[in-house]
Length: 105
Image 1 (tube, one colour):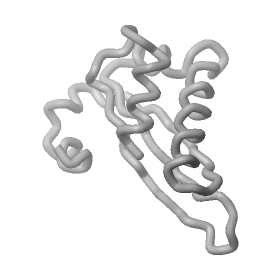
Image 2 (tube, helix red, strand yellow):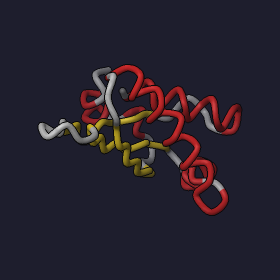
Image 3 (cartoon, helix red, strand yellow):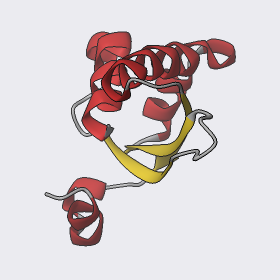
């Protein structure tokens, strides 16, 4: 899921966002009553300017990323999904061993 969301960030922002962007899946909850799968994810960036690019004007870019990722997640899981995205600035996260472990790197 994380790489799928990360891919959508790169496809939507094109060359504006460097590859020092990562996605952490905070929670993944299945609904036993047949409702949508609920996924909470955090997009990590190193600078505030990168956060602004991903959010976009009036949140439009983030909405496009969420919609594209949700559509692909629903295909993958064969069920409805609800994706909630947050963006956090973590300076120098690429050299933070704890974050790298959380990402499985």
